[in-house]
Image (cartoon, rainbow, N blue to C red; front, side, top):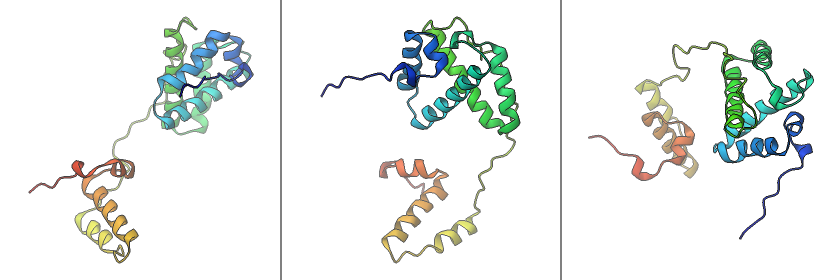
Length: 182
């Protein structure tokens, strides 16, 4: 079944994008529709783009093509005072990717976020605790297996403990993905 894809009116676009013209609006929408496959990333990048463009509009930037590195740096600096470094780095990555997409689509001449450095964040040790074998046995032994729910929970937690997989990866596994070493 062929369906006509309708674009939102220019009023649904951020003001700075709408001010840059129809081509900029189309390229902006394509960035989120065609370039980012993961829905969580799409949502996070859209939120970051909306926040940045709203901030630029309040700072007096007339259109997306007029954004300069000083605007990106000032916005990142303000975000650093309110958010953790990984969150700020994610927002900067979103803006960089958006402007890279706009540069390749010849909407803007240069990427104003390319030269902006984000906050430093170094992870020296992981945050995920690792269970030792006795703790894993105690956890699995504490699950009531007299019900189907208990059996399911024990199987999933056992898979996660012994494969070091997160729940999303464990749920995506098939029987062929699991094998035992003898």
